Image 1 (cartoon, rainbow, N blue to C red):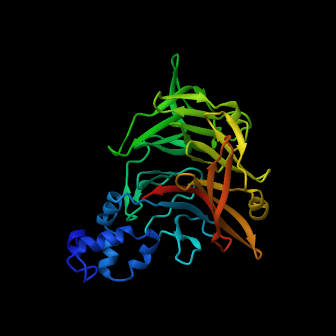
Image 2: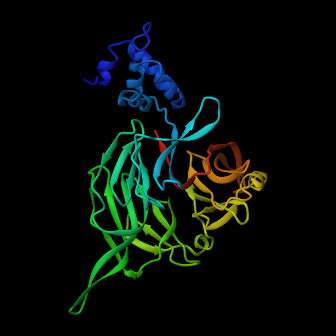
Image 3: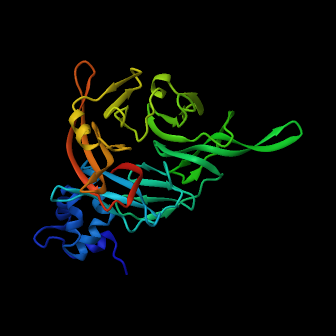
Length: 368
């Protein structure tokens, strides 16, 4: 029979120390060392997979940021979860999480969102969540209605799935169905869906669909593909839709993320990292990254950004290396200086996956 976290400690972790002290020591070790520690013994392996260790880390206030990516294999068309693994030699790599299932072949766009130490996933064949400490998967109730062009975002303990819902309408004595913008909400505490909210004045036919979304100021910003239009803001607290600010909507941001309430995205045409502060309502350029973008991303057609903790973001982008297409990742530290200027500094930049076989679908950051 499988041992509980308490039972597994009957075999001393470190013979010369009390087990509570040993657990306290392991809790302070950077998580990047855990894969190596799990090879020490069966007891260590079970400890690192148990909730006891992570509860102690939480008590000590020790947290780290983990990045998960959904990649599409161009040969098999399989969509899989990968984790950015920080290796001891300093070179980081994306490694497939084999305990997590494949996603639907139509799992493009935003299909998942983190809440606490879990990631919630919604695709065409299932709805599930997985714990980022143990990678244990749990099935959850599927979306209660058909919805196309989904964008998945989290605010607090709730996950908001925005998209085009197929809704019934009554006009006189005639009934019919039409596509309308709608939001359905999954409460992660009750593990149940709330009633779908439909924006009845927004009839969309068979489109448009979103190209990106971010959460800022407790609002969900949804960017449409059509130039200058079809971009909206959903305000959960007031349960209403608003038109997006013209300045924010003036640029075709995609692959964006929000760090400390500011939106960042890489502009491939200008080879710049741009920032939008909703409090000031203006766009600016992040200084100090000109040489990096000129050398590293000069031919990249896309670049995905993800928050990497306070004052940091990670950029994923493709490039050619020795004739082979690879995906790179760079960690960028951000600093707001006197006068409001934002400066960036590249902490590291590595090839995280090679072979030329993969497309990036979605990237999420989780604090554990």
